[in-house]
View (cartoon, rainbow, N blue to C red):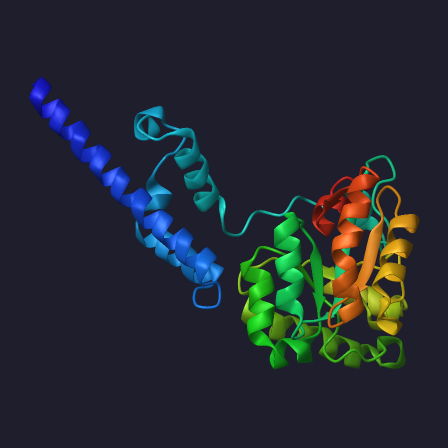
Amino acid sequence: MQLNLKKQKETQISYLKYIICILFAVFFSFCTFPCQISTGQADKIVASTSAQQLNINDENNTAFLDEMELKQLKQLQDRGPKALPPLSKSVLASKFIRHGSEDIKQVAITFDDGPYLLTEKYIEILKAYDIRATFFLIGVQVEKYPDDAKMIIDNGYEIGIHSYNHKKLTNMSIDSIETDLIKSLETIEKIARETDIRFFRPPFGSFNDSVIETAKKHNLTTVLWCVDPQDWQKDDSEQIARHVIEKANNGAIILLHEGRQGTLGALPRIIEGLWEKGFEIVSLSELLSTAE
């Protein structure tokens, strides 16, 4: 009897070690060859090894692992889409949002007008600092750079829509606004698939009741901003970073733009400067889940 139990345990341990080896190989391949294997592809490979069926909270399954191996396994299993926090009642009831809670030392960094060829560089910086951010995508840009749009989503960043072709919606009829938003959603959802899209930012920050109500009709919360370094018209990284750091306060929604070399250069300075002031940098959903 004891011999059978021993053999059974040895078999289980061998199986688990086999799974761990596969997971580490996938993780190593992803880190070493990021252009050859996407996050989504890695997730499929991990799933195919039945790793998702391994309960890492059960000590019987993980007793043979050291602390580092267990940590790496948890990181691998934690990858993938996460459920977004519910928005606060005040946010859902508001016509539009410019700011999060002033009682919590959090800010959200948002990027407009993407994706662009520089998208990958932005993601590299965000990942290096382990920072969450929200990207407002334009439909025609998604069609032009689908791989970059997918890169944003595969890396777990939150997305919103920023119209189909960045025309001023307040100059349009209600039917035209509706057509634009539907086309934007359909274009982005082809890439985003099951990703929850809950935010809308009108081009130029220009809106009226027709724009707001059409967005609400499609379950989109209109989000503007309260910190704007005007990076779309300047390439001075130091000036962009200084403006953001000086103007940021509790609950700030920070507006930045993709496709700008100056903004790319400013991003590390912005992150470090916000940290020095004691701010936690969170996604838009996290910021607005606590807004009053």
